[in-house]
Image: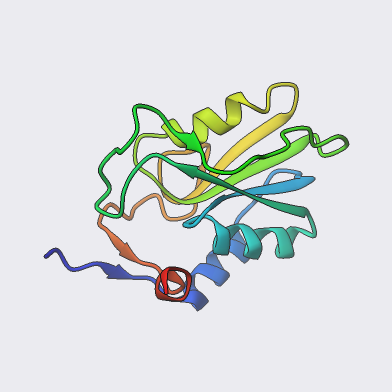
Amino acid sequence: MTQKLEITFDAISEALHAFDFPEIDMVLGIGRGGTSPACMIAHQLGAALKIVRISYRNDNNEPIYESPVTLTDFNWDFFSHNRILIVDDVSVTGITLATVKEKLSGHEVYTFVLKGIADFVLFPKVKSCVAWPWKDAIDG
């Protein structure tokens, strides 16, 4: 098994505080992986927070659906929240973020990941698998 790079909570928090975010009204986290970073970012920016469950890949990073699937009923009408930041931990191809972004036409939407492919990437130089500090807490 490939060893995962460990990035500490403190390192993530420091990088988020130093990051130059665009003006945002709402943070939309992609649940499971995007929940913790979305909460941190929403708190830091003083923005509203929503979490949506989308599934596309399994725990082995293999696609399990033809395209990303929304797992729960979700109201995509955000009224006065016009500037939205979609947050996930990792984006391999960008398809999940693009699918969510497409549902938010009429809003100013940005995508953000800790590593991978998005409008904004916190750790753009990290190419290996990462052991996120909250992974065990979320997965149980």
